[in-house]
Amino acid sequence: MASDTRSEKEKMLAGDLYNAFTPELLGERSLCKDFIYEYNNTRPSESAKRTELLQKMFGKFGNNSLIETPFFCDYGYNIHWGENSFANYNLVILDICSVHVGDYVLMGPDVKIYGATHPTDPQQRLDGCEYGKPVRIGNNVWIGGSAVIVAGVTIGDNSVIGAGSVVVKDIPANVVAVGNPCKVIKQLEPPTRPPKGYQQLTGFLQEEKEKS
View 1 (tube, one colour):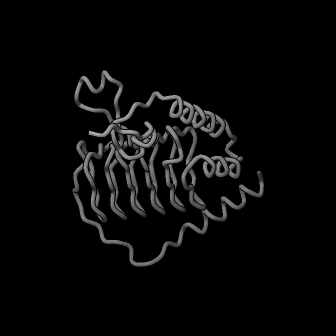
View 2: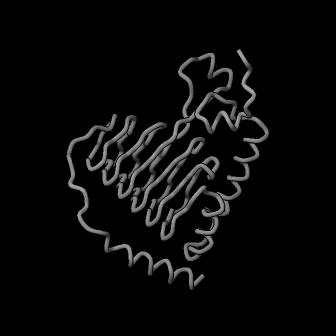
View 3: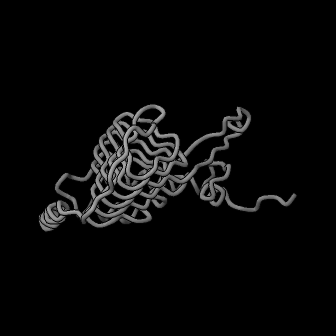
């Protein structure tokens, strides 16, 4: 069998077992920590600076979106954040694989998105192996405070995840799901018209940019 010639970063991004402690990956996490430190120490009035930092750090950071401080992630470049989406305090994203957050998403405080995971095999863990799986959150999703979303999960459009839930499997669109493990308890009707309220958020952000 041919040996695997990929770098550890290439293995990580592919969702395969890899060693997270190579110089390349250690350096990238260190650079991200510097960005995070600067971001978390911005003043509340410095919204333009916050947006600029996230646009540099993330693979994408959409217009009129907000992430409250403090916020933490591993690499940043694997996060693709939509427009008009909001996360409250203490969001953590372990983004060793891609994490996609849609438009008009709301997240309560202390939400955790864990794109990273470890082998159940004890020897592989001792050998320092880990891996990840992508996470995808659809449009117009509301995630309650202290919810945990584990690697490989997809949450469909318009769905609601109850506070404190642990999401270990995919959640379909247009449902309310709660619990540990998170399970569907209610069906929802999808929206029937375009949003109206986010013009106010847009105006607020523009005012903040003009001040800073």
